[in-house]
Image (cartoon, rainbow, N blue to C red; front, side, top):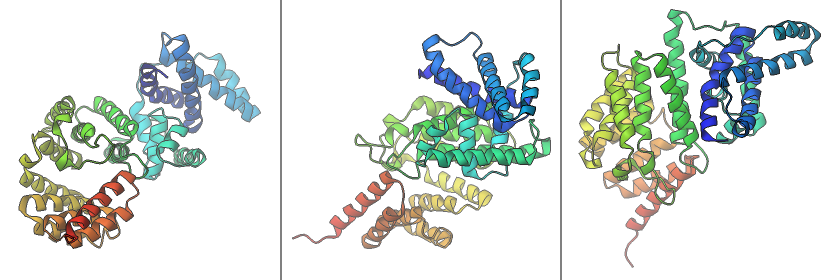
Length: 405
């Protein structure tokens, strides 16, 4: 499929779904019909050309699929469908994408289900594409998406934006889901690839969309800035052989300066937009890294202070893990190792705890202990690129510790 058609379909998918749910009131059936319409467009548009009213074409096609589905299910549905088919489908200019996002990120769903449903209903990805990206059978992913739609239907939630008092909490869930999608794309948790650009690109696209719909929300801007500032480093994160290159060793001339400039501008635009939240703090940390022309020019004291604020806000042990690295860089490895002891119980068995401890022990000159933790981290991670990197670090230390013969 031509990229222009693909981009258009992904943009229109939630708008078409919103139109159908608003008219027919059945999220699950409408979502299935929209997927069929998207597939039809993907087959016909590259060959026949994009219609003059692509949104209307998709709405009409999806409506026909939905009516056909109802006809085949029950005679009562058939009578309803007949009356619906006689009435023309109105295609308004209203963009219901934000409502669709809120529904896909319903509090009743697990993060995994919300991610899958968001990628399908809002991102326009097929079940097969999502299953392939998450390395699970298509039938498994289909069941996950189906259960998510059933939970939304069981909630009885009307198709509208949540009440004002609910919107902040629901928006937080939406941003968290987009954040998880980006993270999975930028640093895959399993498999042979370090990055899955289709996920990180989609997360950025959807966050841009939310930012366009909610331009005055500081956390939306913070999340978009964070994604742009981190994604700018993508070209330098792997070498010519596809192997992981850590931040401190990256060739910063390869970083995407246009994305960095855009990310900094978005972050600056959020100044004064309400209380600073976790995404703006993370974006501020990313900005300090991206502003440094070389790794040794990084303002680690500022990063340490920002991580301190983020830790107070979230209580997340992974934040403490990152603060330990900043403390080691700012005040020496002993300071970082002391912080690791604070979260050793919470993160026991997590490969990142071993990986960070190994790095800090290596900084402290304790090579034998570092070697042990590098090996433990390599054994625990499910990401093959990270496993290879950690194994190389261990092998390097082993060579250094062997006596000359």
